[in-house]
Length: 154
Length: 284
Image 1: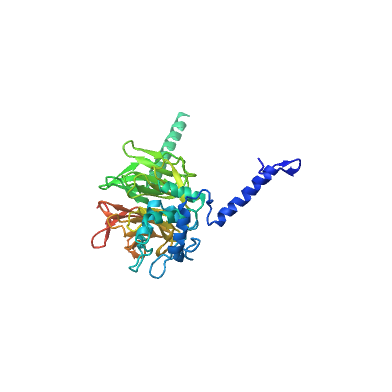
Image 2: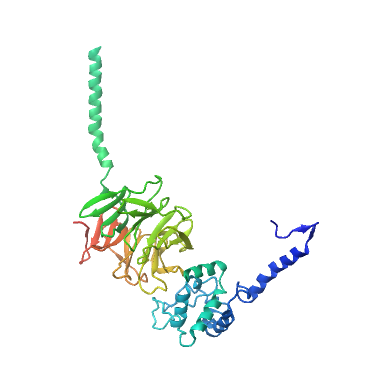
């Protein structure tokens, strides 16, 4: 079935409005920072974004783009901050693991220094605030990635 | 007339006897014993018996005696090439054209696990070391697949390393964000990823086509890999490697609860290192 139907050789008004909605709503959702529209995003997403920008963006990038060459360990064996958007692997971890990572931090096993590869934020952020950050990160993923992560979180 | 026929019969009989006398020894030599066939893959059963995949079949080897295990009845063009032992002791067989099969020891039969795999081109497989229902398969045309229900449902999880995978291993080495690590032997060396499939990176700078890979379950940082017949050992989870001298070309690896590291060779032997580092036949 064609997306737009012609009536007597002209586009019907109803179809035209439908086409405009199809064209512009995804663009508006993209402008708000992710592929989830503002209408379907949980209310804590805005809070999570604010916390992300304050605590996470300095290392992981303002748009969750991560460090360049993040897959290559540095001379100390540390992995640079990975992206949190669809190009990274955050979506492969369940909610519990993401919460633990943010709260407790993580030291990469092949890190040759003593410091944590990812710092712990459990004393800076409440459980609710960490949860809000995770909800915000989910807006940076594709639908398929969100579906995969939801399955992993079950 | 009768004497002519009789003479002809005698000549024919002698010719047949002569042919058999000359040809039989040659035929016997053309069928070498099972143990002389190159070892393609190794694993152990739940009871610690060595299972040896050779060109001429699969054999359970214990106390110097080999018993053949009938392979799945499949197309002649299939190439059994991988063996794996699951966390519950189940034995798995895989290969190009074969897909993945599980051996039912009680019923002495194979069960196909291929219903939801997109094709049968499995070049390597691995079983999770602590989760009996979790299996991994690498398809040359398809990438990495994982099943969490014993092979009933497979799901693509990743494309895998950049180079094709020849050997595959799951390890419970500590430090993973999930439940363990995956080591993939590729045409470029060993690739390593946490079992969340976060990303595949080089495990050290070992280079070449890896044909077999194994690890020590009692000391999981110890990884062993075969590159073009040469055995290599890493004591730090794949960060650095040293080569080990084995008197023959190595083709397969396994960790036996009885003998420890066991290698299969191109000559068909099974060797294990003794405390002084010398390699001896496993059942001598």
